[in-house]
Image 1 (cartoon, rainbow, N blue to C red):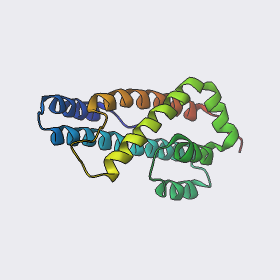
Image 2 (cartoon, one colour; image 1 turned 120 degrees about the vertical axis):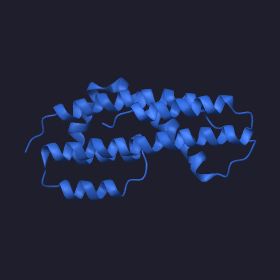
Image 3 (spheres, one colour; image 1 turned 90 degrees about the vertical axis):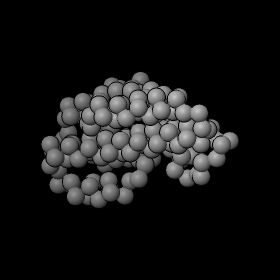
Image 4 (tube, rainbow, N blue to C red; image 1 turned 30 degrees about the vertical axis):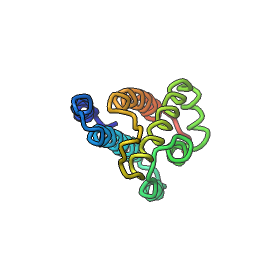
Amino acid sequence: MLPTTELRLRLKELDAAHYAETDAIKTLLFAKLATLELGGWTEECIDKIVNDFLDSRNPRGKAKVQEDLKRVYGFQYRKEFRSLMVGLVGIIGFEQIEGKLNLQCQQLESALSRLKQVRDICAHTYTKPTMQIDGPTIMIDLLSKIESALAEFNNELQRIKLQP
């Protein structure tokens, strides 16, 4: 897992600037930046979880999983996260973890879905005064949900017993 201390501080600073700002475009830019920062942290955190697992287990297929990881440019639960984890521990291993962490996995899926929706707006549109973007406060809340769920998932991932 990646630490969140610096990111939380950055998001809180963006939140304060967002609420202090009177220019509509600048408030939107603060919101965009908060969203993009959280998206970047999430992608890097998932990469770290995968790489740490590979380093701890050193499987024969390590290089293939690392190649797959290089081709992942998102963090959707079903499309990217689930497929990466199934590549690590197989469908049975993944379903064991998901079964133990049903609520956390649902919360993670929901938070990642919301982040993806907002991130896509931020990354693929020009900022206009009529736009509506979730503010940094929402990103702080999403960070808490994503961090908590990924930490629980990572803990279970490290505990899983795999057949050789």
